[in-house]
Image (cartoon, rainbow, N blue to C red; front, side, top):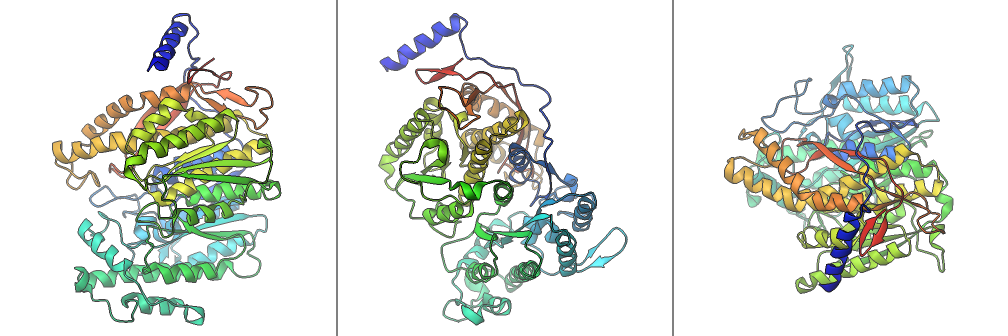
Length: 602
């Protein structure tokens, strides 16, 4: 208490003497990137698949080109339709857009197959039959023909680098889309989690996988009524699964042909379970079709992060750099899944991602500027009474990493178990803007891939030593977006909005159109609550230093001070409270901020 009083007194003296923190005012226009172009077809129009991928790509010097948003937008039940008259993306327009990029000379692609073939992730869970695609000139293509044409055209140019993003269908469809309710979602998820006969060797075929969809692990029939389901519901659900695995099989078959070495296939496992679920045979089948450079990993909403980062790594000297990673866990449950929707323990998920990014064990006596990233992970608490001990131990190690200039990635895999206490302690005691990467927002199945994608991308850029102001600004937006949404929206503002929408507006936080509510009131509430809840975190970021060089042999040599931050244009992408989008304006970077009793000044 005495130390805090002295710190406050000294801080006041500095402010009165005009020596407070330097803050540059956010500018209206950001510096544009002018690097290699990536033609990108997103999974859908949520922030994790659009603006955050844009920030990440630009932080590595790429320019991200995307089709018109209406071509890949998802609309929930009762919401206005897209221009093509549907709730999902325009497959014909997207196919023609990709071909136009190729004709214009583009040679880098990141393409979501769920969007290209199904109109988005949500609709890929709902399409119960194959549907042909009619192009603008009247040509009709089956889905298989469209896929074959797409791969043939992009594969004809040897210099093309093409990442195809695919997913293993999750255990149940989306609530509020098509006709599925929360009760039906829960019943279908229980049906999907039930063990199936395990197929191996020559028996592991698409036809056998589909034949076993209706069988329990002992070979007996799974009755729909036993799960509270109607037969038609099970039939529709399994038809969608059948279509999905058939398309995934077709994709792997096409790229496994000779001459398609310039393609990479990255498959994500959507909401899953550690049980021997309906996904197990699908995962095993798709894994055996992977080539060198392909991967199948936990998480779907982070697929584009992983792809754009790995594209950059393959275009630099990363593979020869022998980068090491030291992972430390706090909380005692790293040998379990981070949540009920992941398919392996956290340590195994982490190991798979470290391998994907080429991160090995740190070498003995390795100088900090020669390749070792620190990764600090807070898990769910093994002992509820020791929650503060767990996160405080992490914070002390984080501060030690800062003191030794060890580049660090922070992952909150606590799944909300620590409430706001951990975030408040980080905001009060640490320098958030100094981190290489952070993730904790949204589903736990994607936090590992998200944090590592962002952190590894930043470290790779620093190693290259060719960062520009536009790249620095893009990285700052990437980090600020992650921290602010997790610290301020997820555990504070969203909880307020959920209660406000249900109790005062009589609506559903999952869809503001069913029943229709006063959306302007929800928007006003969001803006006001974010204005209040972001104050402390914004102050922390604006007094933080950004790592701009790994050469920190001289004090403050590789640092720049954050400037001012302005948040604006808040939005609900799917008119639901689950996530938000926002624009982030930045002021110019400053000279490094100096530290005094935990507060940074210039």
